[in-house]
Amino acid sequence: MDGILEKISSYNIFNYLFPGTLFAVIAEALTTYRFIQDDIVVGLFFYYFIGLVISRIGSLLIEPALKKAHFITFVEYPKFVEASKSDPKIDMLSEANNMYRTLCALFMLLLSVALFDKYAPRLPWLVASGPYIAGAALFVMFLFSYRKQTAFIVKRVNSNARSD
Image 1 (spheres, rainbow, N blue to C red):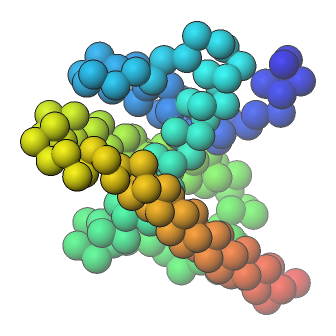
Image 2 (tube, rainbow, N blue to C red; image 1 turned 180 degrees about the vertical axis):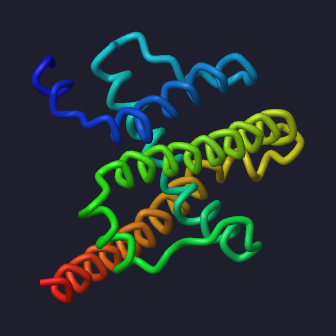
């Protein structure tokens, strides 16, 4: 167990484990759903997965929406890569930036779960089909996450190939 914890980076802690744990605690306090795990090992993996889902929601929904609304703007990726080489603080700032995006997604998801908990009993078909809808949504979300990550890797390789 200690070996696993040593290999978890600060990025994984602040963008997956922290928001996943926070979600479980707050959602359990606000809703009738139970997320807190009795087994610590199962809990760590469960909270990490919840955090991963929250992070992907931030990446696939929150970030593009804020870009489209011109609430945020990004620098061109090659410039980011080049600047990161000369200023290591940029990576730390980017990590914090991603954590804020994930926290935005966390609170959006908490609101959604609280609303679902309140209104779903009035829609029995939604409760009955909920697991199927959730499974399909997770599949689609991770499919798009895979595509986005692949594009990110390609951009990174191309940026590094240009600077060599």
